[in-house]
Image 1 (cartoon, rainbow, N blue to C red):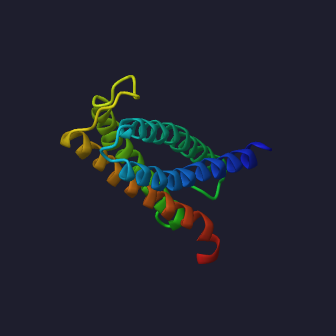
Image 2: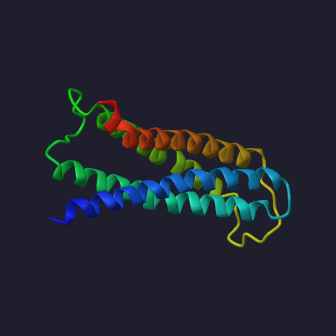
Length: 163
């Protein structure tokens, strides 16, 4: 009886985590741009990758699991049903796109970028052009994922008013 409201609350909390990720992404990117070529640039890149990874794991996994369970428990909702609940179908498709971007682009690119970061991130080294290319790729894909998150958030908030 309390499972559905609990799952729904957790789903909202995980969505909030993803929105916080959007805000922190903007802040951390500005820090990285301000410190490009500076002594501790690598430290900021390490922090950026760590926070992106941690938030991605927690928020994406939480949203995915709670979303699946909510859909299974609520008889009004189904998976990828195009004849009803268009907002939910759109959210589900966007979630699949987000997961594909994370697994096929963000994770492999972050692993490649990590090779440029020494274990002791206090070391005063700078990225070369290849490292900056990986970092910029992560920036672009994170921007796209953040856009998808915002669209999903808007769909979740406004679907009751659009019917």
